Image (cartoon, rainbow, N blue to C red; front, side, top):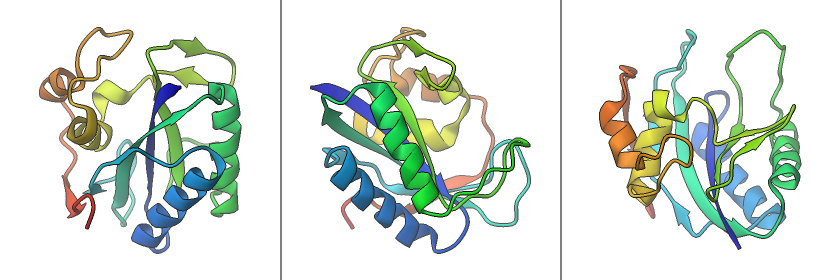
Amino acid sequence: MNEIYLGIGGNLGDRLKNISTAIGLISKKVAVPQKISSIYLTEPWGFFHKKYFANAVLMLRSNKPAEEIFKIVSGIEIEMKRQRNGTGYQGRTMDIDILFYGSEIIKTEALTVPHPKIHQRLFVLLPMAEIAANFEHPLMKKHILELLHECNDKCKIRILKNAGK
């Protein structure tokens, strides 16, 4: 079984309901998460938008290949009415990223794992540190907590809803 970390989040619609819906669909179509971080309210990263994002990180175990999981979570985004216009960052109902697929390094035309910007984003590092502080980034050879301490991201972020509540 592979230990897989997914980052989920969105800023359009009912953000908490969308997080819950995404977790339900991931549970049904990929695997039931073993760990779920708190939900963080986060200033948009890399672009301006009036609405902040709700973000969380999930850890699950599955034997499904990374490419299959990528297809499934992309389908969940579409099912949740995600629209892409191909011009950079924008508001969205749901975004699901494969952050890590065990310690594997994957680089295809469609998929890069580990996600290449993890170390730059508080909205990934804070929830990831909450559930897997000692997980080692397979390329950077640093634990998540170490990456968090080194992160220069100054976006506003706070816990919106504690894990398990």
